[in-house]
Image (cartoon, rainbow, N blue to C red; front, side, top):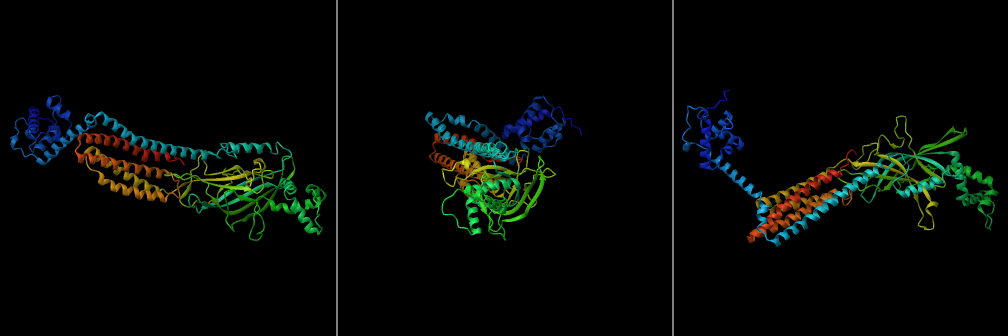
Length: 582
């Protein structure tokens, strides 16, 4: 294609441009929608006109292209050109809008000169009264979210380092060290028995309101040395069960119980054969995994739920007592006992208040032996199978109801943890010292997130739409002088519906969860906008130019502040709340 143009083309373009500017007030560059600098370079001779530019000009003026690029042809009579007056009118208005935008760029500095010193001070203070509490509230919400998120990550790591107790809790550390000082390694006279405890969870279900409970179905297994248990039970029987032993003796022998007082220790020494017989025939009843069954309903359960109670008719022996003999390091023949039971328990909710958009939940279940640490000490089972998987954990069919899912495991954050807490019960008797009643409490921690977020997203999108609607109203009021009070009704209706959705989540979320924070922010924005719209309308009705200028500046400043706050509240804070990789 021939792209050459004539030598007179530049002059023809100048003539058409001058005519358009003088007759209709439109520059040639705006008429054909190219950059002003390009047209100026062409008209000044710095750049040669192209056939493409000439084609645009010819099309705009409805003239043949050859009349522009052919030096042998002249332009038609300009006064008779059939121009598109509708297009010219639009382009002229567009130019006026450009002029208005240029004027609006200096709106604040121009109107600042119209208000007096007192009005300026009042304006600054008024903006600060609105902006400072709003910004402080957003900073507070951000700190709450960050602290909660950091705390969750910190809690997730506890127990994932292989320790059997919480090393971050000074109280737990103190009593762990106290028990270590009385261990068999440091105290040859100690007679407690260590019981290895593990848990296999089958289901977490019936998750009720935030102040109520949930049900856990699980299997517990206990491993302990039979000979050590027998030795411990002798001491337990002598120190705790002596009265029962003496009562049984006289009931079985038919002898009359002496009236005078006597020493239990002396009595046992005098009836040592019966004492040994009683220990041999009753020690099984006190094995740590003993529980009642449908047949043996009078049996006692030798452990308790620390934060709940057993569901009736769910306790049962899953594996009968199994005894395995082995030789210890010194060549002595020993017997290891293994018990396994299944039950359901209703646990009091001992997990963190969930947070949106990603709910971090720690279901905590506590199992305690009925005997204190002088007789039985739990040891969490951290053994693994041939594939390196913990023996304790979940069954293949494990699940959490109510839309929760287990977290994704990392090296530092596990979805299942066993660890010890050191628990004491003084029975409200201040005379009972902690060290005299310590129990090793097994803590089972399951970490989960909410799988579905539809309820949160419904409220979040609704509130976000309301705030955007209010920001648009603010913009219209600030930059075009439109009355935006009519738009506030729609926004108020939207925030009320979102508040109702938020209230329905209180049973699942902490009262000051992220959705509540956003609800409060949205209400604050609506109140600010309503007040400012009424103030601006009042100034327009009074036709007070100083007051109009005052409110104009205030609206624009607040528009910028509220827009930035909205970005922080609806984008930055939810992003901080989200727990990546979990």
